[in-house]
Image 1: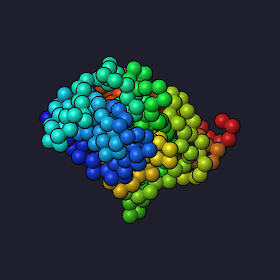
Image 2 (image 1 turned 135 degrees about the vertical axis):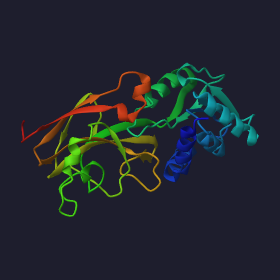
Image 3 (image 1 turned 90 degrees about the horizontal axis):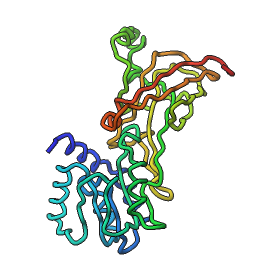
Length: 286
């Protein structure tokens, strides 16, 4: 089995705020005896939580054959063959033996939409969710914001390293997306704007523009959400960073952004394949 997949699931299971958020959401949405569909079931964490909250049966849909085989082993080891049915294949073409009362999934990438979760759930639910059934999460929003680092990440290449200049490194670093775990709180220089093909980030405070930050927020259930920014201890998601030339900015300036989505589903799944074209507009009204 691909060891990278095992390490990914290891990190996700160790992310306690993630697990607690889904636990709370499923406690709200799963009625006793409910039929639940777990999309992108992996090592069955959400399936097991659904059973804990009274689900009568779970259909666990997993596209990756090796992961599905591992999930079958977990079902057998826990004597759950009467409670959990594994379906190996693409959720978009799956047809359940009976309609689900709840569809649950956790397929958020570091940027949010890389695994096309919203579209996958929409297609699956159209065929397999009973009228009035519920989907967890209820929505997924990706936002972009202008950012100033606090002497880390792309922001470290400046003239402030004990009074010495390190900015020459910028000439050798390629402009491409990076994934970052913050060690210190950054400064947002603009508000967060939902991602679109073209958008504008209005600068609201003076600072040095280092990058555009991308992050997601999943609305799981009433009063329950999950986001990778601001981050939290143990978060398994990095944030998405598009580095820019270090530039002083002030209120009235704006960063005009065009989003370049990668072509092809395989590339779209990689957050580092997403690109931005950015330009700074100076002064109000420009």
